[in-house]
Length: 140
Image 1 (spheres, rainbow, N blue to C red):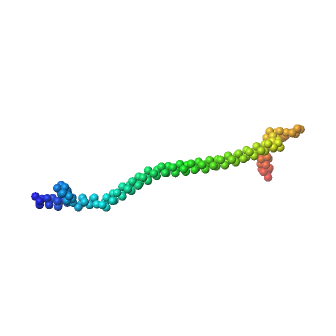
Image 2 (image 1 turned 30 degrees about the horizontal axis):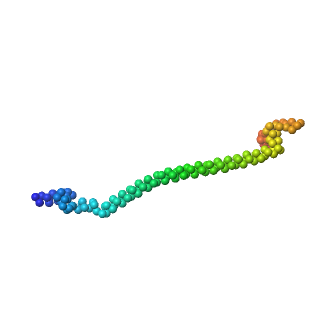
Image 3 (image 1 turned 30 degrees about the vertical axis):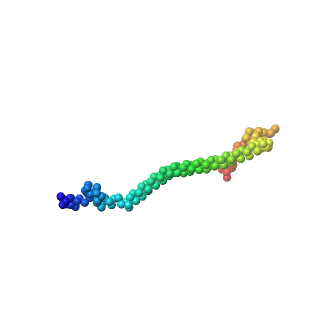
C-alpha cells in the first residue's frame, strides 16, 4: 500500500493526506499562502480601504459645507449691491427733501408741473422741450 500512496501523491501533488495535515506535515503550497508578506499585503489593503472610507465619510459633509459657503457668499454680495443702491436712492430722496424746503424750488415745481401762475400771468403750454428740439433737428 505504501507504493499506492506515493503514486497517488505524485499524480495529485496539491492534495494533502489527512494524517499528514494532522501531524503538521503540510505541503509547500499551503504554507506559502499564509506567508508574512501575504499577510502584510492584506493588512495594507485593509488599511487603504479604511482610509478611503474615512475620507468619504469626512469629505461629503465638507463638500456640502463648502457649497453652502459659496452660496452664502453669493447672497452676501447681492445684498451688498442692493444696499449700495438703496443708500444712493436714500441720498437722492434726502437731497430732494432739502430742496423741497426751499420756497423758490417749490414755486418752480408748482409752475412747471401744476401750471401754477402768478397774479396776472397767463401760461401757455407749447409742449415739451424735447419735442421742439426734434422738430428743429428734422428741419436741418
